[in-house]
Structure formats: C-alpha cells, structure tokens
Length: 223
Ligand SMILES: [Zn+2]
Image 1 (cartoon, helix red, strand yellow):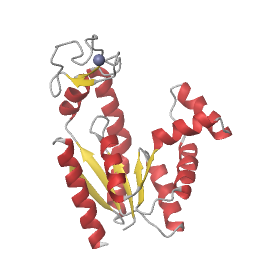
Image 2 (tube, helix red, strand yellow):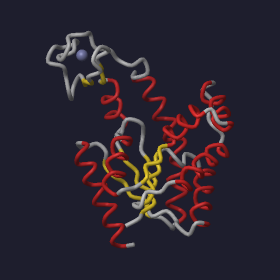
Image 3 (spheres, protein in one colour):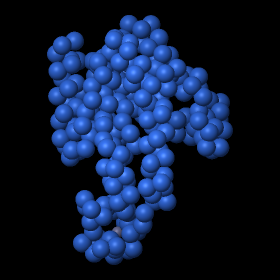
C-alpha cells in the first residue's frame, strides 16, 4: 500500500512521535518540514542561506520558499509506503501548491489526519516537562515525576525547564496554530477530494498510534 497523508495537530499533541511511528509502521517517507529546513540550512546551499535569513530573524518563511523546498523533498522521496507530510502545508496557498504537484504526478492525497487535544491538556503536558541537564533524562512533574523530586533520580543533578515551556508561550503557540491551520483544514474539508480524519490525541500515546493505524488501514482498504 502506498499512501499520501498530511499529519496535522497542535504543538504538544504528540505529532512528532506519532509521525515517526506511522512512517515506520507503513514504510512511508516522513517529511518533516522542520527537519527539512534545518538540513537545507546546514547544507549551506543558496536556498539554505535564504532560509537561514528568515529563520534566524524569527520571520515566517514565505510560502513560495516553503513550497520549493517541500516539492524537492517530495520528488526525491523513495519510500515504497508513500508520504507522510508533517508540518506542511501550513497555509492554504501551500496546500494548493501541494495539490497541484501531487495532481501532476497522478498521486493525489489520500488523507489529512488531524490529532486533536484540549488546550488545557496541552498546557499541562508542556509546562510540566523537566529534563536533566547532566544526563539528559526527561521527566514530567505529573505524568513521569522523578523519584527524587526536583533532582534527577538517575544522577542527582537539579532538573531544569525550557524557557519557552511556560503557559504564556504555549497559549501563544496554540493561538498561532489555530489561526494558521484551521483555514487549511477547512480547505481540505471543502475540497471534498480528501478524507479528513480526526484522532483524539488526549489518550495515551500508544492508543493514539493504534487509532491512527486503524484509521489509515481502513482508508487503504477503501482505496
Ligand atoms: Zn540525570
């Protein structure tokens, strides 16, 4: 089976983890826009320098640059299981460009999978994250606490929290996500050409994976 799937979901809903698992399960190429941007930037190519200019200044990368990069990645993807797009498309213009590219190749999208989670749940997940600066072990104050309180139970170092794991920053990122992404989901729903599947991301990660696998397999059977 070869499927082309767009994966969407708010920051903190576990999209990255789920994308890796799905890609592995179905032998799909996992095309993460974040990874692709970082690799291009690191390559020092002309496009990479252009990207660096936007990213280092904290600016949004323009649609045509994003589309050029992702089109290149899609064209060179060789996985037999198909494509899993993660972090792209992020705007309606990008979604339209993707549709054109896939239509030209005669391989349209099969599904848009949206992982959902309540804002408060996401805030709780992200603001509770802690990590050990010495050995790298990760914790969560509620879901995976250290046996030694605010110290690492593996090596004893004092646990730290990322500066941007605060409620204010998380809420801001969620707002940006909804503002940007809702029109993209609406675009796909209105197109009537692609299945938009919502997956409840508030359950345990393994259950999210199981629900996604089931949804994608039933889609493949229909297709
Ligand atoms: Zn440690």
